[in-house]
Image 1 (tube, rainbow, N blue to C red):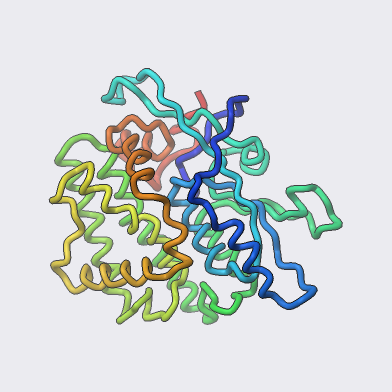
Image 2 (cartoon, rainbow, N blue to C red):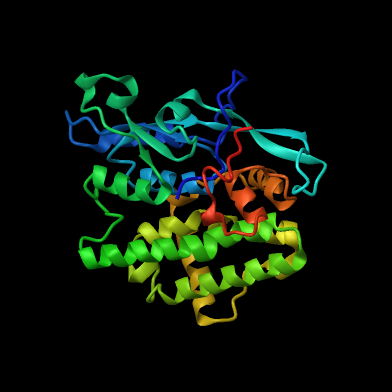
Length: 322
């Protein structure tokens, strides 16, 4: 999945600065010193957006393997509030992207994050290595980072091809049953529709919890893998429901699967390399308010307003480049 919190056409306005809490780039560069002397680690240019859970997936993979690569973060998206121009938006204002980095549009014309590019390709310098295509789509990015460093010390993907296939299916399942429903609860403005989305999301979490197989991570793993990183950015953000929709939208603990899910979330958030990737809560609450009041104009928001699930957005039908 790409982050459908996508960009607008190129303009000349000032790009958003990297958020002040973003320390992970320097930390990654320092960690690479642990590699064998004389071996240059892969260096990536990472076009991202601090608020985007799709991009968060790639950040988790990069931090998982932070002792085996380095990367440069380009904050690629920025927002602007405008007067409402479409009756489908039930507020007096709309929120659009006013900025997308020119580097992002060069390497991903759809303006989607995450987008990863090798140093050689970004600089168009074959002396730094082969000129390779950009890596797009968040689930693909997780696997790519793991493959790039050959699994590092603690692989994200299993060595068994059957288990890899299982994990890919499970990652797609949580993407549809949990991650997509997140936007349904926020963007839809009718209480009945919000509750339907929430109930479907909780059911997806229940199934995920049952598949932890004793955990602490998916399928009984002792360290996070593809499915864990696919779900975590949304799991971390789910408490926004209580802020914008009320206490009855807290994730329950009334089944074995949901109890297991809560244990998994605690285990994930206890890991320093995971915890350090999470944006400040107050900043994220302010950001996601654009979705909670229905004013966000993104491909995901447009699809959900149209009655589709977030993962069913269409690059043409839900285009926001106007």
